[in-house]
Image (tube, rainbow, N blue to C red):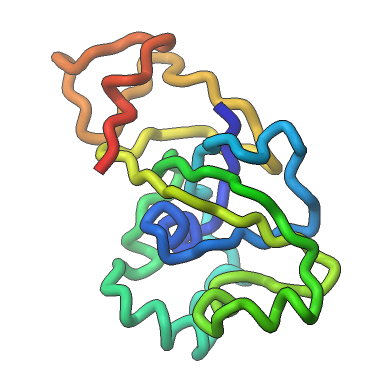
Length: 168
């Protein structure tokens, strides 16, 4: 499965269905359009991430969602999946159709790309994952890694992920 690592709280906003576009400087590969991709939360918190989180416009909308603080959100985990429906080149005309809330959740710079996301699915148990830049292939559990909340009596196996990918 293809996965993309995203800073918190934006990764959570996506898998919870509050963020409908992921903004990037690059278009997604055509091979993933219409496909389900994994959404992982990055491990680190960077200064620019904190600054974006503290923007008054972002906070105005984020506080209404009753989500945890950035420090309380899971980091370094696969949180869920989403369908990458399509993408748009960001233009002034495109920006006219984006809500103020959605704008606060992304970097909608003209000339960039807005990946349209659909049908988010939140994992019941987040899965520890080693992230990477860009879209990367995740092949499942390695080296005895278990999903958060998984016990030793839970099903195991790197090839059969279905028991671990139960959704909320």
